[in-house]
Image 1: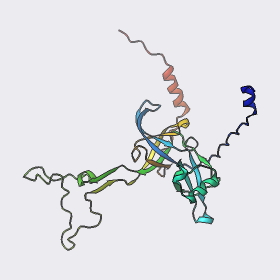
Image 2: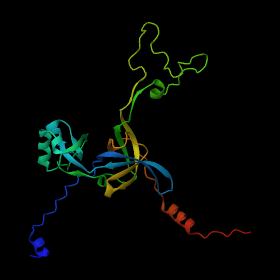
Image 3: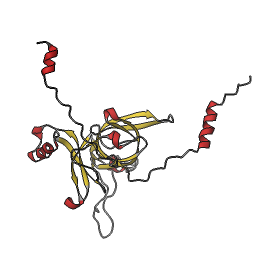
Image 4: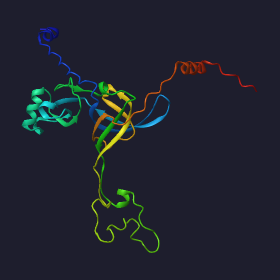
Length: 263
């Protein structure tokens, strides 16, 4: 039997159907920080941008007002081995027909119409260049830090024999009747590992084939940290409207011949 006949007799596996896309109106996604780089915009200006691998995410479950008392969507990002997943979670993922999810995050929303369990959320369907987003993540851990590094204290004088007070925080206790350190006093202590939100970051570019989103500015956390990207809650600038007269004037200025310089 020839190779062609063997291949013809073998049953061809049916291609797996792509999961349905979550409604694009929901501007939410989970990503992983890749690092920072630079890029030029259309005006030729240089920007420092953060590169985030956002999605693809799967809808693990939904919360409804009637059943749970609030509306929300739980997205899953990344995968893990079966042996590292408990039986309760295995039942959820088996029901959805997906491999076990590593990270899950629930986003509370006002409207989840059209959202179903098992849908997929991709960055290309959610965001476009020019939009503004809020990014939340966990900042880098700095360990135990003094008052000058942690709270930007100025320290003590470096003269008059005060050799051991240059980086001291100063007085801590209150005066008069209290005579104790009040709660919330800024002192030396653990620095970093805080939940930080960066507001109103501009989306500079989307690379759909690699699930990358480039954001103008810094993103909290070290390389490989999880970040949550949502539509910004801040007021965004309105797009500039250029009149037809201004466009014609700019086009005429480009096509106008340059005047010869007289020697």
